[in-house]
Image (cartoon, rainbow, N blue to C red; front, side, top):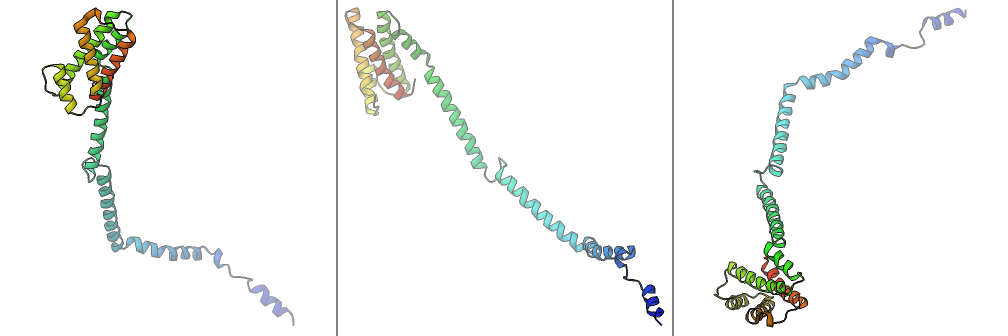
Length: 203
């Protein structure tokens, strides 16, 4: 009487192994891949993709051209930066030339000499250098005094130093060795010329 239920339990599997069935697994993979394959094989998809790629390429190259190309949209800024760097380099070169002015270096060598005669020559040479510099600046005048008058009208701040240095030079030229010049006094006079030369930007 009890063998029938037992036999039905034995003959009926405990579970159906669908997930272990390879055919079932592949069918699920196909079901999942089918929409992807359909999307990739759809001509409309590639049309849209081509349009989007083209637009992105245009945007990319436009930005590159605008921001990085010397001939692009910011070429004015780019060339402006180059002009600025060139201007700075020229300023530095002029500065080096001013500092390395050979004539001024010679005058400084004379004023530091142990010989009194060299101190006088230094002052005379500085006055001669001032005359040439004023003429190069386009100031009018046949003498240093006339040139200094023109420079005074031009508003140079150190014009009084130039005048004082020139007056000492005149005393040396007119009185010669009878006009006493110490090295300290000579350095003071050369410093006055220096103040004016620096304002003229020649040293």
